[in-house]
Length: 371
Image 1: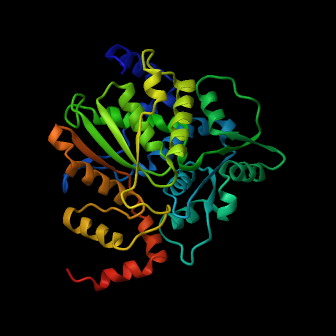
Image 2: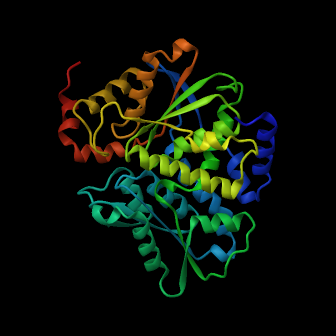
Image 3: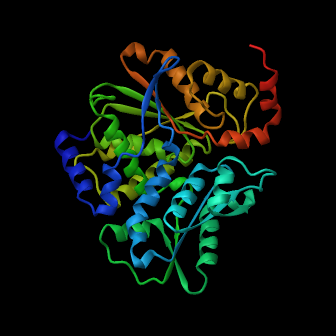
């Protein structure tokens, strides 16, 4: 584990980055409040699901404000109800930038939820699932199409290298590719900043053993939280409920992001490489397993009961999985050991509107429910 001296050096290094990068670490975008929910400490971060894309676009903000980025477009991808895609579209539109969003699957009969926001703010193209499976190829093809003969395509890694002082190559009109779920190393900075904020004495503090529980789509949130705790020397553990991939895929994502983070930002010199290489996230299966995107019988009603009893809104795709795991860990006895179980709510509320179209019978049953 990193020592206090190395943590201070590492934090100082981050804060000494160019302003367009260092402000990611210093800023506070997420408003937090606590609820004493069923059997675990609940931490609501209603905009956290947008944190990755907010960090991504904010990292580009100063670059785009200069003349060399005034004529630029962004290409990213996600599911039909992708919060990442919607957030990217909104934030790009606010800055006068064009976004091109590749959404998996078919256009729904009615535009709603995040899909509606993506359509209003960005330029949406629906991609058949079989083709979308090769995300990198799909992103590259769309970026080349948008760039045309006179433009050029940059992956986010190129922008980050330029931001950190490396000389940029000569480009004309630029098309910038952002990975699905903003799965880039710079997104980890926003999560390290969140960890640093939460470790303040009037919030979670720095000394108590804490077991975070979070749902995992791309896994970036879990990896960033774990890396933040490790770099800042906190006795925190992160359990991530795997939703969209198998454990091998999440471990590859973890290794890739940490490798990119080391390349761009470094790390405390005495950060245990064996500890990192062995994995810093506790990846677990969902208690009721299923193919990603499917909703099982009774889960919509479970979300309703949680909302009515606690005032906390969860959705059956993402946050219900984390809620169930946090409850399980609490009942298993984590609190008996003095550990604090913290459920980190990642948002997803607008996705419920899309689910109501796909699973009409489950939502119609709510009208007939008699407590």
